[in-house]
Length: 590
Image 1 (cartoon, one colour):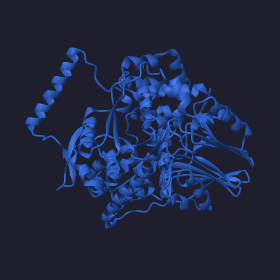
Image 2: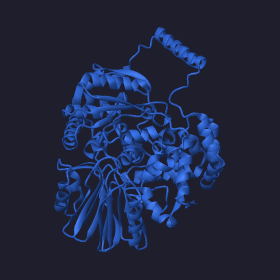
Image 3: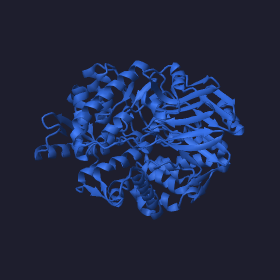
Image 4: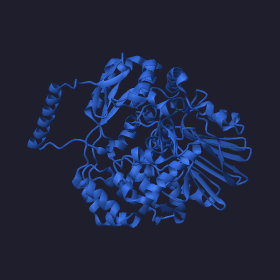
């Protein structure tokens, strides 16, 4: 991402430029003419060029972008020359997760890729407007004009996402993938670009598998040609395997990495690492394990990492091991398996026997279900707040809230992933190149297939079989279970036979190991130590901060449910209110 800032306010421009001069970010580009002010910086861990002045105009980009199979500085001039107010024509020749700003013929246009993984935030008030790829870069110069939306804060903590174009601030919005910002004669407007997803019927399902495999392979080849072999943060499941298969099919040799330690912030299992090593051995890939242990005390590096990445550190709550792993300049190009959920069913879909459901059934069956369901259930206003957003999504896609075809739940999942699965790609792009291969829109739109085709991961397995069948020869580790692929049934099944004898044997083995841990005093792995969480939350200053922003029973309820044990919610809550307090922001119920 590096940093990007656009405004028509000389004061905001000067403020942002001053903040950059005090930071490790290197200023790459600035423009101050025609009542348009623009700035971009370099990424933290790699050198990159992301802006170009041309013919009394300019092009700026942030993120990871490939245009016409190129990634060098020449793509900016190519984009400028090709742009004739047809945004989708540019998008059709572009890959990656990015934002583009084009100032041409006295018109400034800003847009993201269609899947909308990339963050673009904007503020408009009377005659002043400002745009940034970082939410908190807007907050610093605008803090006197901002107020916090309590319901959106609660939504963020209960579902790890804020639906639609809203943020935790009433006055700042996030640009949608179906919109662009257009500024003509200093007049700010949001333009609608349309919804290009069409339903896929069972008749062309088989062809869709061939097309997805072909596109993934082609895209992986283009990216590896432009950026080199990627580093893949791989697990033992399906999602990262899709990315690995695509790059292997393209002749690339990704490096595999895995963070293993005692941090609950990124739940890691030795079984995932073991499968990564199997991939490494079979396909002759480099594999490296990183330490991923908890920073103690938990808030030790919060001020430091907040100064660098703002709200980006909410993803891993300032865990030093995690941040050092991400910042590693020896791995300038990284990928992850995010968005894989769109290609398979969820447990809720499997259990739901109806073909047509209501918004209420969707909310109660899936969307309200989370590790923090108690927060949602405690606040009727929050439930209504979320329900209204889901109804707005129905309106957006022409769905009947009282009779939603189960296939059309795809739209809800896509809108959710646009807000829940994008935090890592936006954080990583401050440092280096990073994108989600499975978020490429030409692939995503072909994932809208009948839901019954996704049961038991059939859709993904058929794609993997077509894409790189050897990837299915390695066992799976998914949902804490080791599994294997059965080609004759096109499904994955538990690796261990569930005979009564094996069930008893495995249960006794587990119980013995747990008793042994207690006897010798071995700490359980993958846990935030409860005493450190308690110290953080019970600190009077932190407690008062939380109460000043949110109702007291939010904290009391979370403490009761967790007993300070393994609760990311509590750690993230303290970090969030500390960030709010840094800017002396106020709460608002509007």
